[in-house]
Image (cartoon, rainbow, N blue to C red; front, side, top):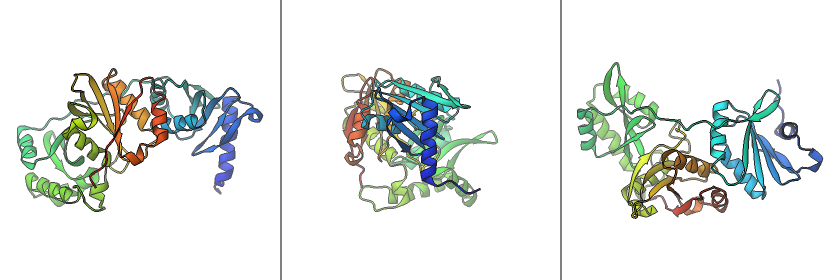
Amino acid sequence: MTALPEERLGQLRVAKLVALSGVDRATASDAGPLGTGAGLIDPSGRAWILIESADRRSLGGAVTWAVRKGASSLVLIVEAGADVAGHLAREATLFALPIEVRRIDGTVAVDAVPVAPPVAPPPLLPTDEIAALLAAADVDVVVEYGVTKAEVLGLEVGRVVEVDGTTRLEVGVGRFDREISAMMFSNVPTAEALAKAVEMVRRYRRPGATTHPLRDLVPERWLRRLVLADPSLVGAAELIAVDTTIEPESLRESQPSAAVGVTAAGTPIVVVCTAGVDLDVVPLAADTRAAVAADAELVICGPARILVSVTRAVAAQLRVPARFVELDLPY
């Protein structure tokens, strides 16, 4: 079968959105393809957006488009399961801008029902022996998404796992590296393997370092490490790492990282660090605040060059707006 040209696909998506929305095409403005979907503005000023193959990070782009168009409200129609649509519907409730989320069910769009945020399982804690090994290696111990990890400047170099009923430390950067390390260093003491992993990461992940994969992986987590070491950078007195409401699947994807704590005045604060232009950082940050400390001040921090005006404009649409802190990476 010959694939349809992108122009034709765009036309079909616009037609699909018109059919699902019930908006008269002749009265719509700004109707056109939008990524893997389409968008239009109806005569009342409401934005309608269709996203095919939507995921949990689809709301931010839709809100960005609606804000840019000066829309009075937004209806987001997604091709996704009830769990993904429910996540987006939960995020939508955090905005003052009226947002409806619907999902495609057959040939119609039905209201998405918000779902509760995920709850991480209890973490597997290190044994006394592993805890001593981690302390001697001078790594940061971070518990996220039910996993106890050893990190160097935000980059994982090992994690606590259970193998055949035995708690052990798997050494390596990321899942595949840990698997390779397990094969290559099967006869090497864990402390020695960990020391080699730490030394390698510190060689490339340091202030002033040149371009290297170990320097450039998960920069958001490096920023969070800077904030955890000096909470005053974001106006906090104490901070600890905390899960966001979306667990990353790999080290190569954008993964805003969060921390929760208190200010010098004793009021709660949630900090979300980002390091690249990320249209979805505002919904994710707001959703994380709602999940971990709903009454907290929300701070979004990252390099000045990526905290663009449209990101700030989207944040201004939150029921409880966020504060931005510019913080550069150390290279």
